[in-house]
Image (cartoon, rainbow, N blue to C red):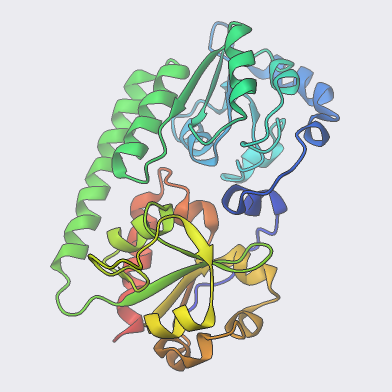
Length: 310
């Protein structure tokens, strides 16, 4: 089962999840021209916000605070309007000079933002910095909503949004819990650039598989072979895992040249997933960004997993 490939083919979307080393200086070029435009658009007496996380940027728009947004990082690609905001660079390689040129009152994001020395420079300049811990949980989403609500001075709107999202989340978890029978075995492959990697424990991908009622086929309770984070994908490990379904991102499929090329990864042809061509490919930010669309992403992944073993 393969989701329709995303039309989004931006390298910056890939960077968020593949942890490259990039220069922040290149993203600052031309920032001053857009900075002046952004400054003129912020309503009087409302906090000026720079968001350095795709998820927190989504929440800014969900709260109707987009006019307060004077800059975003390069992972902020949804909604489409976020593409037109002044960019301050990749979230892990920020520049204090470029960010401060936008004269923000607050910077919001997650603890993945950095470098730490840059965040300290921003704080020392008198700008409020609020970074939410990224632990791949529903409470992470709740903390993001609350943080954006505080930063934008929209506490009532944030409370209303959180109530709506909590209801959606409870409904999704109940639907997953009602499903009986064997859980589909899945592996998550990250292949945005370079050699493909697979997800272990303590990753957003592993958390998503669990939430959606799928077993991470590479992790066995109590096994000494379990691992955390990402590691290189090997044919032997993939074959031994015997996944029913492969989960990846649309950007990953696009990066290797399409579905046929993706299935040519060594070892995949010997899996149950290959026999059914059971592949779920979803947009990276949607799937593992832990933003306000998390309930929908879990529901979609759950349904796709069920179809893989139907």
